[in-house]
Length: 327
Image (cartoon, helix red, strand yellow):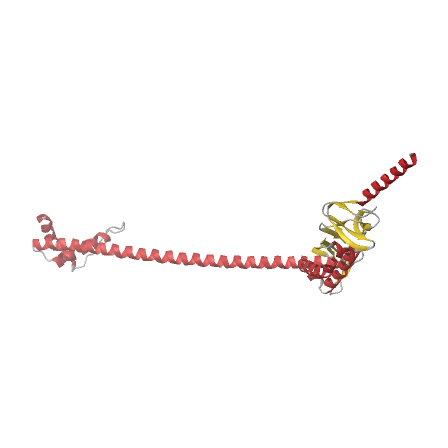
């Protein structure tokens, strides 16, 4: 009886062990490839899965892990695991020397973004997928950079990234891997090349500064000459308009003066006609009087000589006197 109980307990324990061994829990965003007696059987979905113990066996795959070394540098380590990560992953490859088309050795490291879309192909179509991706990226990078000169390499990162992504995606497609992106993280030319590039950039900056300074001086001279030209035009226009206005004013003044003299002569002539006096004699007498007044205004004018012919004119003063009496 006791032996039966012990045997039953052993059988129950074995069953529990077999049941526990047949239960396979797969985390979300992961999967597992199961082989039955050495051949591919199925791909497990995330969650609870039941397999046959000792008959079904998860296939071990290679994974790549980044660890920190003693000197602070990162080290990649290849290990094995039965789980396959279906999320997008990134591999940071160490710097490697690459020779450009103009024979300049440059240190370049790249970042590779990829995702496993077919776990079966990723397990059976390629051995050691992380190592294959690293070597493929390095060789493709050497080929692409070898077709470009250093200046093109430094200024055409987007073009290099696109070409690398296309090359890697075409090759890894049969591995069940989708390359989503490739990025060149650092491009480090030799120190001598960097110093030469810095000198070249400094010379280019100086050249641009001199060109900008010369263009500024040229623009300043042009603007100054245009300002002087405009100023001279404005001054000439103002002077012209001023002379025109002054001439018009003088002409208007002469017209008004002539009109006033004409009006005065007309009135004097009317008055003379009424007094029956000769107008010519009157006008000549008035001119003599005006001239005589100017001759006697100076302080040194003590003696005044009058021509004999003026006596006839002065005799008309009596007529003028009579004219004013009539008025």
